[in-house]
Image (cartoon, rainbow, N blue to C red; front, side, top):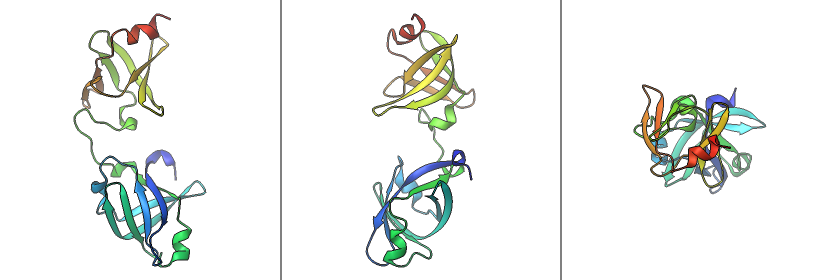
Length: 175
């Protein structure tokens, strides 16, 4: 199994009681979308192992999960601190100006003042913000992904229209 085909759902934290239930943290924007989850893939030694869910209870980004065949504390402890994944195909569809980072790779970035900057080659995630990495005439341009910078995401044309802060693009291109 390739991790490229999966997204990080969250992490199993610790057992919840003695009957095999587990506390988990869901690292997603809309946790309630996963109320009817039937299965997750758990990372064991860089391999994904499917675990079927008997019951899941979600409150905010925390969940209590009961897995099939995990019915006591000893079995539950084997899963603590393990990462959970789901196939990318199970991501809820995004609309408007919201997007998943993986879905916009290759989209053309068009600035309101500068015009066509180029295609997104990668989304770089830094501790305080993510940026779009674009190469214009072989020069790197980094456009932050926050606030009012993203004006429009056109999925049909594979374009992202931005309004970069004054002078930002010039800093990269006039080195």
